[in-house]
Length: 80
Image (cartoon, rainbow, N blue to C red; front, side, top):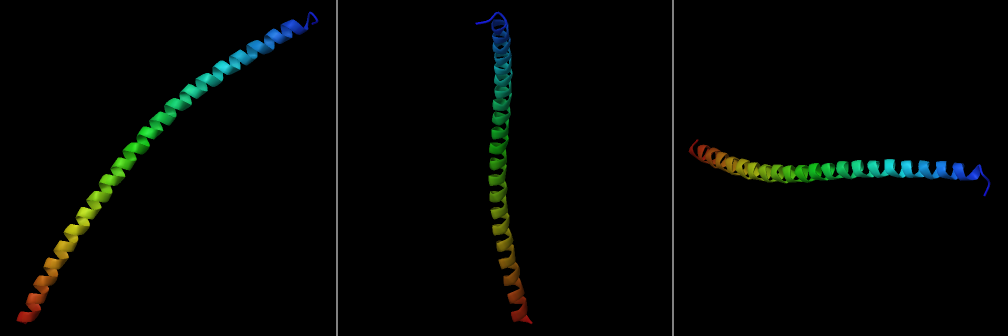
């Protein structure tokens, strides 16, 4: 190996080590972001489920109210 090749090889190895460390930091940051997003998705799924249940309860309540109103209107029509 020539005298100039060894320093160049050392420089390239240092660059690779530095790039590897940088990529490991990026991976750690992205893993953290992924975990945060997964937590947000879970919370949104829970919120969505709660809203769907509340909507069903309201629909049942509205249905019951409409039935009562129709019954009252039916009685009023019979009396008229």
